[in-house]
Image (cartoon, rainbow, N blue to C red; front, side, top):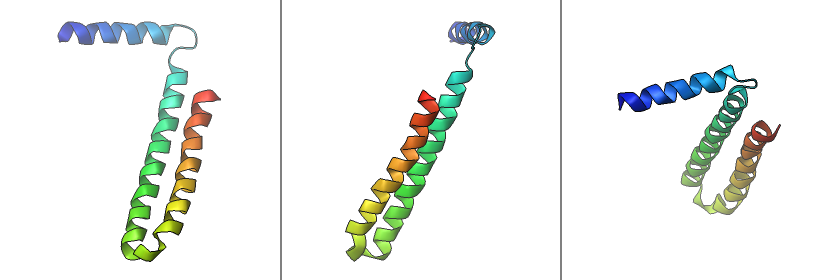
Amino acid sequence: MIEILAQATDQVTQAASQEGGITGSIQGGLGCLGAAIGVGIVGMKGAEAVGRNPDASGAILVQSIIGMALAEAVAFYSLFL
């Protein structure tokens, strides 16, 4: 186990020393983290809204899908730009 951790540390050190390094990975990771948090919040609030008013579940579902799509757009921007 210690050997695997040592190899991983060496690989990260080598990647960081190269030109470009791991900055793109950090940017993409943070963007995807933000999108995951946004989708989680939208899902949580959608479930809460359906619990309060079950008759409006159709309209809530549509709004939740739109909100999740907009949150996922952040992940695509961070990965591709």
